[in-house]
Structures are given as structure tokens and as C-alpha cells.
Image (cartoon, rainbow, N blue to C red):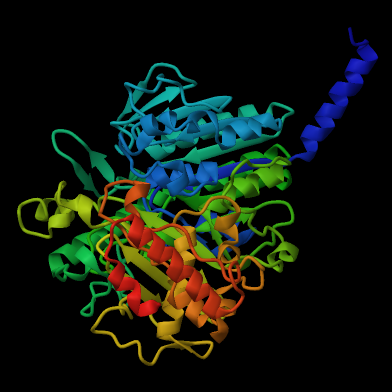
Length: 598
């Protein structure tokens, strides 16, 4: 048995170690936009987080749908590695999360393993319901109060389960206020212990108010009565992609009709309601900061503020919603305040939700198995370190419009068919990448339909001119002195790596193409000596459009590696040709089609 004096010494040492680890408060909103300037309408967030922390101006989600995005966020793994690609079973939601083993192997468990107490208030997963909340209980938290379906998105009819207990309904009370009160309670509890803590508050604001019965309707979010007078003169920014005369996009997007004045007026009010719903979140930020300050823990706490995905309303003629690869849907807010984080700073580092698990575990003094990301730079010194310039974006399945005009107008046989379940599944599946450097800001995508997009956001920030569409000329386009026809094969090869990457290949994809390590960016790859190598890479493609991730239908996966067979371009070309010839024979394809390359 340990002697009392020795026991006291060990306990004191343990307390000292715990005290040196920072606390982590994570605020996660639902569907918050960047491009409609929602952050500018949150004065308390500006006071306590933006002015006292760092805004990451190039932060992205990797899949523009809440449940897959949250799994990506809390595991640090891309959606094609989690295989959670929807909000409902069988391809997503809580049952899928349990089946994939994620409930027992994600961030809160890893933090507990390194000495943290963990707490959660609000929305955790979709399809986490009043029927399956205890089958099994959501794992990883010392204290929890989760919102449950089918009432998750009903602002005045929330149902919650506290610490695995029976569901409790809060009819008539305002959901973001309820989850905030639960979060304050958990924060006080966390501060009463010696252990460092990880606390998440995940309100539903500014998500649509959703009813599933007797029929589905996602209408304007509700807001607290105390905020009803705000933003009466607000209008969605009339940017180039707002209900444009010249439309960008492919597949169902390119054929959308322009919105009429009645719809536009409704959409403006929809966004006003979203901004009003965020005011309760704004107030919560201030109270959380004041609680931490009163406890003397503010300077030992990192505060993360972000959202699961972005949102569009009227951009590209679209009704309210998400699920697209446009910047409106994937470019999202991220603010961090904490020890050594520069105050009032804007970082242009390219970051993604995939990186946040690694970031948090690094702060906690632990490591993450099989992560697809790396810690974001939290200090000015680390910001100067070399970092990748890419973000992987992917999506499978439906694009569902919200709002009364989006849903009813397009489910009354009035077109477009993608809104109707059954037709929707086939044409909103795509792979995309964002590449952001000092000289370039690019978006490239390949759809399951075979259609492709290329936008230069330096010249076309609204993504209205697809340079791979017939109506837009790309003859003039150059980057680092190279032509458009030389740039696109590099982007396609990069996407070939990223669309099925895992671990280091997600972080250093160019090394998969150039094992020697001498190419680490798009500009490096544009050297003329690599032209033949890239021109004859396998191309990103889909065998068919699917509603979820079926690897066998997502085309070739293996890229050619420069210099593996021969360090000359001619040798790389021959290696590729021989491999394709072998594959064509094995698949019973027509050998003659390769004869022109021999």
C-alpha cells in the first residue's frame, strides 16, 4: 500500500500535470454561412473572439452536409474513410456511426485517455432519436445532454437525453437557449474539477426549422422574441452569383430558372431569421467567456468557434440549402482564441475540418491514430511553417432545397427533377478540390455524370464562369506561364490521389505522384518536363452515380508515380501505357484502342 506522504506527492504531481494542460471550449453552430457575412452581425462574438483571437479566412468543410461533416470533424478522417455519407441510415446517421465503430473511437474518447473530462450539449448526430438514444448510449462524455430526433430542428419543441437518461421534452422553450443553459451547467461542473476539460456546445442555430410529420418542411429558423426587431433592413449581398443572369455550375444547377421577386423577398427574410437565431449564440459566447474569466481559467482555455457546413440562399439561383461544392457551401468560419493565439489576427493558412482533431489532440498532449489532417497553425511562428494548399471536397446523393418555395414548388411536378426523391440520387455526386496559393485560388470538380468544373476564384469569386464549359473560353487562361490545357491534367491527377487518400497521402498528395519529394505544390508540378507524365495519368471518373460511397463505382484509384519505372517522361508514359494495356486485356476491352499509343 502507498504511504500517505507518497500518495500526496503523486496526487500533487498529477494535479500539476493536469493544470498545465489547457481547457478546450468548442462552439459548433449548424449551417452558418461565411459569404453572407453572418459573423459581421454578431457583435459579442467579434468582441470576445474575433478581436481576441485569430480568424482563419481559408477554412473549409470537406462535405457540405451536417452528419458526414461532423464525423469528419470529430474523427479527423475524410468521409470516404469514415463511410458516413448521409444524415440517415443506411448510409449515415447514428446507426451508421455505431456500425462503423466510431461511437467507441473518436475525439472525446481520445481526450479522456489523456486525462480530460469531456462534456457535450446540443446536437451530436443526426438520426440520434428518442428510440435509439440508448442503443447504445453515445460514448465518450463525462456529461452530456443531446438533442434527439425527430425534434432536433424544432426550435420550440426540443427533446433531449441527459447522461443517457430517458428523453425529456421542452415544448415551448427556445432550443438554443436550452442547450446554452445546459452548457453553462457543464462548464461550472468542469471548472469544479482539477482535470482539464473539453466542452462542446452545439446549438441548432441557424439551421432551418424542420418538421417531418405529417410532411417534410424545412422553413425559416425561429428566433427568440427578444431578437424579433433586428435586421429588418438586411438584404442578402447582391454579389455576382446572386440569382445571376449568367449561371455557373453543371448538372441540375446549370438549368435552374431565375428566381422571381416573391422568392427573393422570401429568401431575404429567411436570412434575416437566420441572423436573428444567431443572436442567442452571440449572447452565449459572452456568457461562456465571462464564466471562464470569473473562474480564472480564460487564459488557460482555447475557444474554437466554427460550423458544420456553409449555406446558400439565392446564389446560383438556388433555394436555401447546402450540399454543393460552391464556396457558399464549403467555405466556413473558424475562429480560435487561446494561449499564444494572436489577437485580432487573420490567418490565410489553408485549413479544413479534417485538421481540427489533430489540432486539439496536439494541444492536449496526445496523438491521433490514422488521421487525415494535421494541426492548424495557432501561433505566428507556426503560421510561417510550410503547409499544403489543398482541400478535398466530396459529396454523394441528394441536393435537397429548403424553404416553402424550394420544397413545395419543386415537389408539385414543376421541375427540376433533382428535388424529387428518386430522381435526386443520380446527379449530385461529385469529387472536388480547392487549391489556394499566393498566385491562384482554384476549384476543380468531376461529377458522376462526367461533367467537370473549373473556376478561378481570383477572377471569378462567385464561381459563375466554368472554364470547362463550352460557352466560356479558356484559351486566354494561364498560370505560371502554362496554358489551361496543361493545368487541368495536374488538378485531375491531384484529385486522383485525394479522392481515396488516407493518412499521409491526404496531407502530402504530391508525394504520391512524385515520390522523390521535389514537387509539393501545383506550381511545382507545372514544370514542362512533367507534361507527358500528367497528360497520360488515369483520369477521375465514376462508373455510375450513387447515393453513397461505393468504392467499386468510383473509377480508377492508382496513379502513376514519376520516376518509378524511368525518370524520363518517356519512361513514365510507357509505364502508364503498359499498365492500361494490361488492364484492358484483363477486362476484355478492345485492344485496338491502345494501338495508337504504342
